[in-house]
Image 1 (cartoon, rainbow, N blue to C red):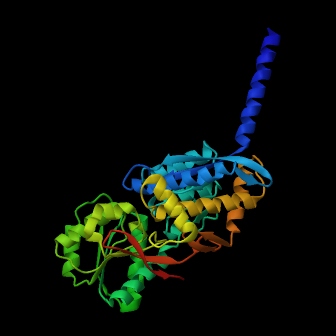
Image 2: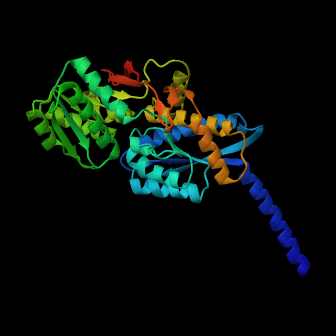
Length: 388
């Protein structure tokens, strides 16, 4: 009886040992994205780009760190485009799945609270798409792969002023969401610095999930505004633009990087043709590594990748470089997370498909913005580049 028990314990020990070794040889990366909810296309683009990136790692036989090759897995979790879900997902990925690093959330409404979780648990996190300053502010473990709203707001204000020669602007934004609320404020501040107090003649808001904007748009039309700036996501852009035109608005409507999804044009149709928005990259006319990524993504998934997909690709490239710069994987998750965080903080320059990035001490990249025009074919055409 004792021999039998001893034998079973020995076998179990061997199984556990092999299990531990297998785990030690795998680097886990968590992807915190909205697969469902209001902006599922954002999650889809993120997931597809991550899968492509993982294919390349697997084709290379794994990720080499300090002379050793490790298997990589990406654990994808749906945050439902909700702040509370993003927090729950971040907590699960860190405490249960023991990921080495987090990629996402994308939207600021989820990235800001999830970033707090990552920082509290001392787990490196990079948001590819969150432009709100609070995502990384006073959080040494949180980084991003995109420019910030304090840069984007003035870029759009300056572009409208120079391109159209206008002096009276209106803003329409979601007051319940961190990203549009923050960007609306930065735009208003910049516009009034250029044109004087009160030149944002209408500053109208709504709440997430609202679909009727006729009241706000009527006030905007009656205000004497010459242009509307609306930093909203693709599911709202189409409704806003179409309703504005139905009410007789025939002046410019300008957006921000949240317009970058292919769904914007699919939902908006011809109403969005000829409109401009600021973003991170332009697919039309891309060259080099950017074009290679676009062509491969398009061939694989049947549509041109949006800025979220491209930024996710770059974010994973930054993660890969940080892990390799770390020099070794010890198997102690706390030590390894600290090492990757420190390595990510030391990256001075990174050549991504969305542009060259130079990182600040706060974990924010200094990079150029792109102004895109939606063509009469519904394509996102590069119009001009605006750099810091």
